[in-house]
Image 1 (cartoon, rainbow, N blue to C red):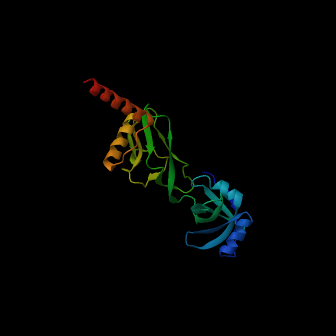
Image 2: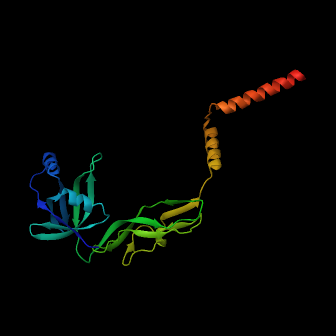
Image 3: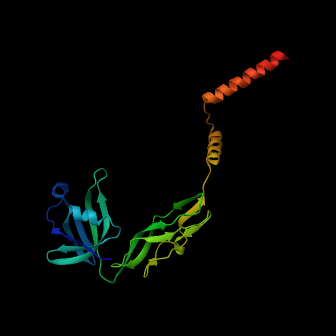
Length: 222
């Protein structure tokens, strides 16, 4: 994985007011720490940082005061409403060292007909080299039948990666598709156990009315 360079500036003003001013200037407050160094408070370019962090586990080269540090985003605080990043925690990494990261699980292919594919774990935790973090773990589900279960220990990991997630953790579960009739039956049973009653539809009411009239006519004939 090649790193993405971000030009940082040292930050001397702190507090909510200072952070708001930084964001108004289309920049992002951040802190850089790790490897026994004191935390360094910086600002990052807003647009470039947002684009870079769309990629999972992206390796960043933080350019500051004529030097550069490789870093990973440890924590990204996003605004709950607006599409902006409020703050980023960056942890320093070194070439050749091992880091533990959550890597997304992606499926490829189509399972057998009339099956439902559920990804129980959307990420798995791996130990990998800081400069060789895989973008994803790809799992082929092509033609797999209902009843198939893929656990973490079954995954084909990228070269050099070591699984940290429990190998017995269920990652992908393939089950048979439930028919609408079966769903309706399960719903009716659950509602019956809960004591829920529904008003008859117009068609059902009309059918019941016709049935009652027929019974009345039979009694009259008798």
